[in-house]
Image 1 (spheres, rainbow, N blue to C red):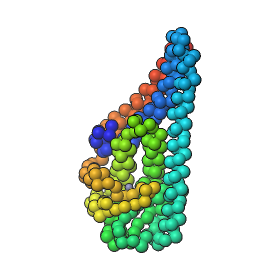
Image 2 (tube, rainbow, N blue to C red):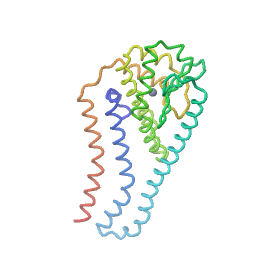
Image 3 (tube, rainbow, N blue to C red):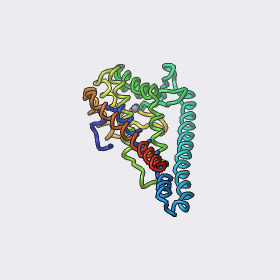
Image 4 (tube, rainbow, N blue to C red):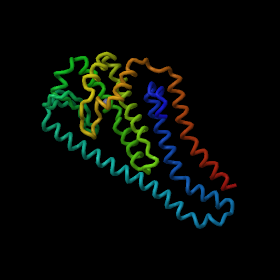
Length: 267
Ligand SMILES: [Zn+2]
């Protein structure tokens, strides 16, 4: 899916697709071993009794890793964001209820998601960007906050970190990060137009930001991809419909197999 760059033109549908694939993988990973044992038992195999406990342990391990990863990632992110927000509130100048400006010459812009969310700019950003480009940046950051993109990214980070190293797919995580940026870019383009947004992206390219924040700038490859997508029209509705249909099929497949397996055991 990460190689299918055309999905980026329908970023919301593509994100749903990624979530469907991930959920289907989790359901499969948790149910696979117990179902295999149930199948053996159904065939009257003597192995079933021996393998039941290891199978349940395996499922428990998968589930346990997921929950533990969720706890660790969630706690780390929320603590880091809270501490950073306190710092920004103490040091930054209030220019709007949710916007703080730090006295620093390097242009950068990012947001701190959460219940008391903040958009953080530097004095360098205010100096470097004219009003329309600044409007584009603010619209981009506020789209992240409004649509809670942090929760989407947290979901994928948890799955990524709970997967065994051989099954981890960093390109999937990179693609999801890019899709979230494209979504915020779409929102900003509607408010400010494509040209001011593109100029602001160039001005902020390469800017650094704290790790737990969502930033307007990203790695150069992602910025190039986003610039190219800025020039694209909204996608044809059939593309999004295709991705939604794919998502539904991917989610239904393991559940249908589960139902079939249970049904055959009952028969
Ligand atoms: Zn962003």
